[in-house]
Structures are given as structure tokens and as C-alpha cells.
Length: 373
Image (cartoon, rainbow, N blue to C red; front, side, top):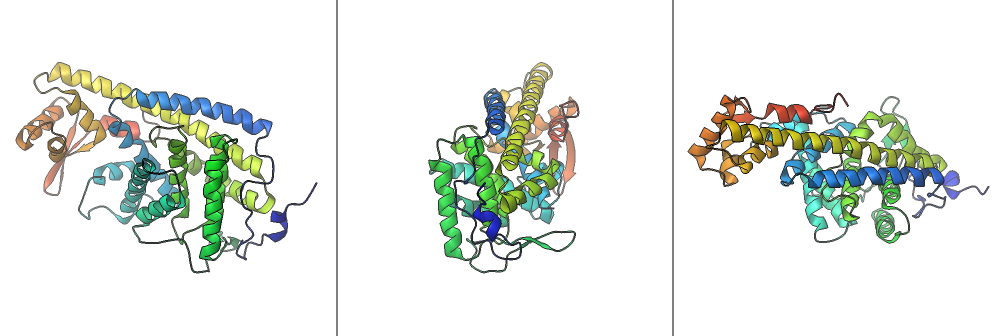
């Protein structure tokens, strides 16, 4: 068998300027990959249908992407909690800790990228915008050398990405052409290939991993496999973090594409199934809560009132006002009535009160409503 150029040129401590362009030279449509791909497509279709069963998509857009933000940030050792993310998601003050702020910027980047897809296909310029939002910096494609990835335990260099802004832009242009022009390759397979290539190019000084994971979701939306970015893909990666990095590196060192692609397809399938169950549980809880409010508080009931406490599990009086549900005094009365029947819990936060939806927050915690799944 012919030895690939990749085996001859890669050295961990040397900029990998010879990173091969796409498409991969090896067969990436093996029987195992195609079989796995079919199963993942079924799971994505079920997720797509489940998402459509909740009429107010804001309920989903405000919840699943926040879980994704938390997990994707944790992969980079930026640790916060679901509770803190929801508490500070609409907070304009500086009360949130640094990790929570950074995770919230991930969610903002995902939303911004989703909005940009309405104007143009996934591109390098969208990747730049996403990374800038995640980092809160006006950065661009790397222009200075010296970037290297090291083993956290030993300090040994395990990978040095390509150097030189022009070279990086050329490789990104090739990456962009592949994800849109290789239409004979299933989009889920292309997702695995594009994610490896983006991480191998490593175009930014920081934020590459999180940017790449946002791009994964945007790609699935761009190709019509999702309507909104509600696939909690980082959940699988953080549960298999060592294997994730091992499989990534094995593509670089040994051109082991099949194992990497199978890993990513399994990630898509498993998280699509998990996300589907989570969405169904949210829908059931929303319907139960709606029925309870209608029965116990018929004078103040509206579907919009029930939905707002799911869109904002940490609800403020201003959320009802901004949504046009009620004026401030009436909004306060509504929320306190929901506290009285046990749907919400009221806490003091600085100068204002927050009205928490504990059932929704429990559902969004790991395993909540899914029998420990």
C-alpha cells in the first residue's frame, strides 16, 4: 500500500504547513461509516420533528444552546453551572463570574452565527465572527508564529498547527469549498471531516475548539439537517474527551479517518437521541404547567404567560413587560400568583426579585426528566 505524505511530513514540534488539503485521500465512505451515517440521519430526523412540536421555538433556543455553551466551555476547562447561566443570561450587570460570562458569549456566538446563516452560507468570515464573539476580542486569522498544543500533564508538544496568515487563509478557502462543493459526500460525514480540518488548521490564537463546535451546529442547519441549533453535541464530546483528542490526533499522525468519522457520527446520533428526549420532556412539562395555570389561575391564564417562564427559567418582571404580557404592576401580580400555587419560587437578587421555574431548571440539569440518562 502506498505510504501517504502525511506520515512523512508530520513532526509535533514543527508547524504542520504540509497539512493535506481536502478531500481526504483515503476512502471515507466505508461500509461501517455509511451504516452509522444512516442511523445518525434517523436520529436527526426525529430531533427535527420533535423540535417542531413546540410552537414557541424560543423555549428551545433559550435552553438547549445554553447547555451546549456550558459543555463546550467545560471542554476548555471553563467551568460554570446551568443555574448560573440561566440566572445571568439576560443580566446586564457585572455580577456574573468570568467563566459564566465566557460561556454566555459562546451562546451569543451560536445565536449570531445562526442569524448570519440567513444571509449567507457557512464561511470563514462567519468563523471569524463566531470566534470574536466567544473571546470578546477583535481578533483575526493568526498572523504570528509560535502556536503549539501541548500535553497538559507532561508539557510535551503534541501538535503545532500551520503558520502564516496567507497559508492559513488558503487552507480555510479549501475547507470552505469542501463543505459546500463535496455534495456527493453525506453532510454528516462532511461534518466530521470539516471539524478535523478546522481544528488542524487552528486559525486563531485562542477559541478554536469552541469555534469549531459552533460551526458543527451551524453546518447542520446550513445543510437542512436541523432547523435551529439545538443539538447538544458537546455533551458527547465532554463525556469522551480523551478519545475525542486521541482520534483527532490519529488522523494527523496516521491518517486514521474511519475511526474519527465513526466517533463523530456516533456523537451526532447519541446527542440527537438525547436532545429529542429532552425536548419531549420540556414539551410535556410545558403542557402540564399550562394546564395547571389554566385550572388554578383562570383569571390570569394565557399561553404566553406559561411560555415566558420556560423561555426565562429565571424570570424577571421586566420579561413579562418586554413580551407585552402585562404592565409592570400586573406582571408582578402574575408572577407572585404563580409562586403561590408552587409553579415558581421567588428569590431576592440585588435590587430585584427573580422568579425561578425549578421544574424547568431540574429538567435542564444532566439527566433531569430522562430517568438518569
